[in-house]
Amino acid sequence: MKFKKINKNLRSYLILWSTQSLSALGSGMTGYALVLWLYLDSGSALQTALLSICSYAPYVLMSIFAGALSDRWDKKKTMLICDLFAALSTVLVLILIKTDSLVPWHLYLINAVSGLMNTVQQPASEVASTLLIPKEYYQKTSGLRSFSQSLNSILTPVIATVLFTFGGIETVIAVDLSTFLLAFVVLWLFIKIPKTAKEEGKGQSVLSAARDGLVWLKNKPLILRLIMFLAAINLVASIYDAVMPAMLLSKSNGGEGVLGLVNTFVGIASLLGSIVCTVLPAPKNRVRAICVALFISMSTENFLLAFGNHPAFWCVGAVMGWIVIPYMNANMDVIFRNEIPPEMQGRVFSCRNTLQFFSIPVGFFLGGFLVDNVFEPFMSVQEQGSVLTDIFGSEKGSGAAFLFAVIGVAGVVVCAVFSFLLRKYKWRDPE
Image (cartoon, rainbow, N blue to C red):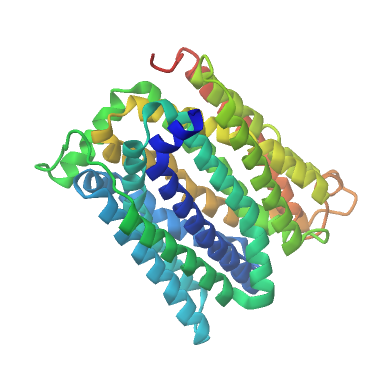
């Protein structure tokens, strides 16, 4: 009986979630295959990191305005149009590959367009989810989203590597477009997204409406501090994302298979964390739960990647770093969806995106630049048998390992500082 009730209350959301998750798997495989293609072609961490920088830059720069527009526009139409433009960008990549014309700057430009579409689509999707989900299911559905993201993390490197190896990047893109088509048709024909109870901002300019989101955040210090906490964590995490392929693809005991293996363990850890998250009771203080989860993540994975010179250590690090992230995300999601009125969520979520994610392109650039121009050159001139070569090795990739140790320390410091700043907040679920 309980299962039937949940299925009835969440039916539309579950259909939307499952098909969009499948489409996200296809998009993730294309992104993963393009990273492999570019790094193997260029050998540069910075050039590879620029793929993510170009995706996030328009997202960060335009999010604050996109939310103001999202609160005015029909959520379903917005999602459909943005998804269609993103798919057309993927088709363009396929055409360039087929004509043997693909060069790195094409990918940077296409990623920028896709990032711009995601800028508008993401707040519309967030509000659509809020409108489809009863409040009592916020934590469980956050766990479901983490579950699908985790499963995609497991499947993406495995499926993408197999398809890339045996069928080339064209096959990966073909699968991506197939999953997009399914999700697009289902959203178009079978999902009805309710209107917000109160439509706001239609008579305002975009600048004025965007300012409303910033003013709302200014008057909510807890939400603002949580956003800035995540911005600092994202800086560390994006350096990690830029550095990991450079280290694992460069080391003699690494390679494409090892990179895929570590990413698979990231997905497995996130999957397990998501399952646990859906059955755990609500914590007495969700703010403290967020701080503890991030401290565990930051104080383990980076150090195991830095000091462990074997795939087994890297896989253990992936598990330790990611198993708590779904729990952190679920608690953050519950706080945000309860605190932010649905009619304001487009604007507030977009302001959040600008403030919380601006550090990601910065981190990707720093990670790629530091590996290519600072840490790898520095380690290459160290004498064999020195303290640093004993700890991090002397082959290519040792500089990336050294950088992992640095960002490990940075992550612990960030968690300590924000745990202190958030110590007075005790957020509990509304009765």
